[in-house]
Image (cartoon, rainbow, N blue to C red; front, side, top):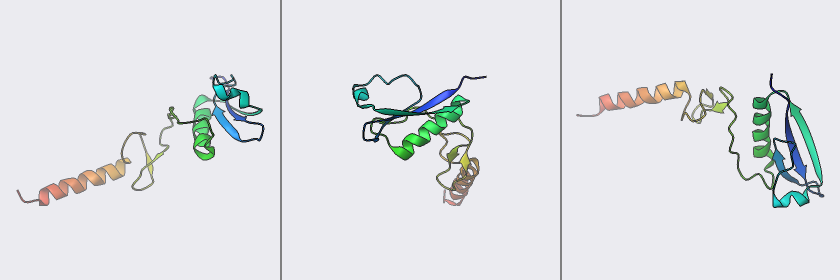
Amino acid sequence: MSSPRPVVWYYDRTMSLLFIGRSTNMPAAPWTAEIAATKVKWFDARPAADAFWARQIMEKAPKHNKQIRYHPPVHGSYPCPKCGNQKERQHAPYCRACTREYTRQRYLKKLAAPA
């Protein structure tokens, strides 16, 4: 069993969100002097904590979280841009059904094209 994982919000003295982290260790950055308050939420497993962390960054847009480099490995959590169903892999362009339909349409178009 994995150990509990935190998601930590760091605020300045006006309670503006500065950073959202995945460790209770203080970030090593020049802006840490601005930190006036923190809030911690604990999770039982790392995948749940990482998924929550990524969603919070996208929703809250903290001042010092510039980009998300970690994509949580949650099976079926990536929406297909065509139909909105869940893709099986993050980097697949479409879900399986849309990929099949695209391939089928391409094949039919190729058959219909004059030689």
